[in-house]
Image (spheres, rainbow, N blue to C red):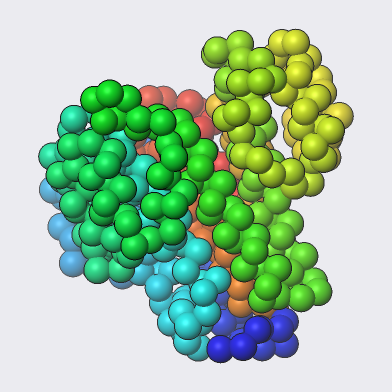
Length: 353
């Protein structure tokens, strides 16, 4: 399929808007947070929301938390596949973006479990719906005893080249932080290059804006966490952050990394394009609260893209982020109800787009 323009594939953008119109609303979240059990949450999703088809054959009265989460994650992946197969979008490399994201997520989980010597636990949690789609044998990661075995499993994929120079300890364990940094860097560069090659004009700009915002927010949040919990300095932050600059210039990001303390960090952040859109109490936000506030900004950008763009790539990329956020909200509610947290506390953890 040749490069797409904003005048093409209008049926896809229309389909996406119809799906987005069925999203969970504030009243749905208000109802979900008052439920007393996982079964009650599942029953509400089944009978009062668009998740009814995903849960049609599920007995909600006896459903387990892990099984409900698995169904919802599988439903999200199948939704993504339906979007991409509609009008044969899956023939275009860009539309593999979510699958590549999931592959990297599982590869990182495999490395983490390998380091911990917990391969059996990894195998038990592998999503079955990825097994036939992934570019490497995911289940085999659970059998890897050292990092060299992991590299062998991914030898025919781009991930091998990304990870082959990662420091390894004498017992075969990999530096997980560097694995995560290198794979995230690869993913965002891969996305950026695809957009530059395959799109033009306002469609290209809309996609790059979201990718740049994603990069900035990852770095802003991670740097703030490292300063808060580990008092990290600029050298350590530059080693651990993604080597990209989006809507924040290199000068601005370096100023944040060089901030003497978290108070200075937040004061500098408040004078950026992101900080000016955040709550007035910015200096008092915890890392978790800052992450939710920044995620809300990204949701706003994605929501605006869905409502204004006629390009299928812009629409699907935006939609998948919003649906991932919705799923995270549901899982947050499930965990909150499971541990008997009060309603205001659970509500404070949600990012409602």
